[in-house]
Image (cartoon, rainbow, N blue to C red; front, side):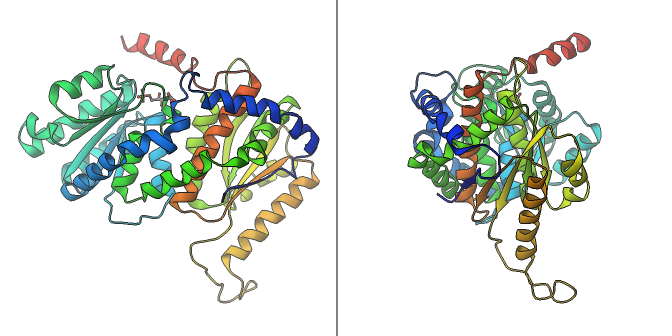
Length: 407
Ligand code: PA5
């Protein structure tokens, strides 16, 4: 396994971690039992998504041959996984630009994207598990006429629309069936924030040129790893124990600039899975070393209500040697390593608990391992805390208020 966890700097005794292993074993058994609601994602890398993979890759090829721009309309789990992967990973083959819309209500951003769509041969991909999400439906209604204008008729526009939604329910499914859009489904037993390895994540990734096959193999390797019986669950256990011991916030520190958007995906995953019934660490992200020059002060000397999780990529894809100045002859990677070690030393001196997650390199296979690892760790922490990792009752409250106003 290329993902490695170090809990030595958490201040938690090994015996306390080991004492919880039977509980995490039970949580894993429940996740894999096939009897727990909304756990279809657990078996995705080893089964379900490989079955649909050829179809996804062929569809991605067709999109790349036809279009100059792929516009994904989606929000939350229906865009964050794809967006984060596209920002993070190298493109191993020719891809086309992927742009995301429907993830905010910003007029300026809508306008800018509309202008781009008008200029380019565009294929639309509408992603919504429920099929009814307001931002996404609104974006779809705005963009559809642009395709009709460009291609001359509703029928021609429909050939350039892909819908990814529930297999049976929702207004998007109804429309896709009625208008004959190319469509794929998000399985009923997989929620939005766990859907990155369904077509919702994989199709945009494949269109961008990411090696989706390698990403799935990495996730499958993580899913089947025997190390779940030993140290892989330690992160979940530490998060749970630190919360029990009074920590309220988790700073997830991304020590690679291309992982900044992964932080957005993690915030949704952790926030919606664990933040309920008055429980859950507040997940927030920092990018290092950038944020050491802003939040570094708070981390070192502010209120000690937090734990830190440092996500470190050990090997850069190329080496860059500093040509002159005080650091002459060293590589940027050496500076980065010194930065990570320096942060750990300084913060440990203040007693801050730190979990390290290391990956060897930022490639599709290891990224697949990481995604599956974070999903499973999150579900285990929520289960240890006694909350349901797979619902999000709180998200509905603001929608009810907003719809009252709009109606
Ligand atoms: O995790 C979830 O289920 C949610 O955050 C959804 O991803 C988000 O609300 C978008 O929903 P939908 O895919 O139904 O448009």
